[in-house]
Length: 199
Image (cartoon, rainbow, N blue to C red):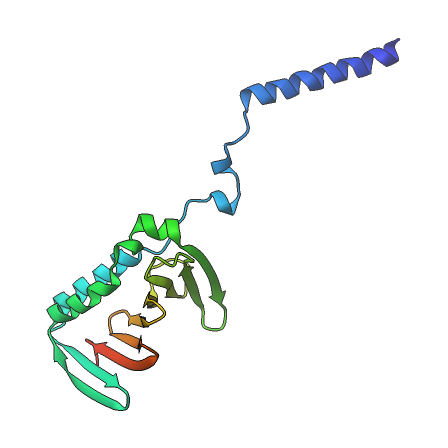
């Protein structure tokens, strides 16, 4: 009889403990589970960064040196920071504000051991958006305090005509824009380079 009584007591104790845990320590909500799909997004603040860079240029640069290459011909000159700012507004669209950026784009990243750089790529499959890809290269860490470059790929158009632009910003130094313009099957390539720190 005693042999049967002991297991019965153990079963009752185990059941009581389980009920206590269930009642006093409810399961953590899904948002707190260690699942990457539930983690809050921390995308690179692309618009804030671009605006900050343009503000610095407007504050410290007195002139922007330009090189424009169409076909085999290159022309050079200078423009005012205000004119450069107007040109760069094209790369500050509402689709890249925080809410839209995190809603319509996905992030992938990798760390290059050889160069000690982190590469963050943001891409979208939404054809209604002009910017299909944004790359941010960060030197030496996974934080965004040492940005080496920002790349933005833009496309708009249809079967008859289209414009593809690839913009590369090197903070504190330059912007390079490669354009491919297609009209009724004819393609024209153009490169615009802007420098404000050429020493």
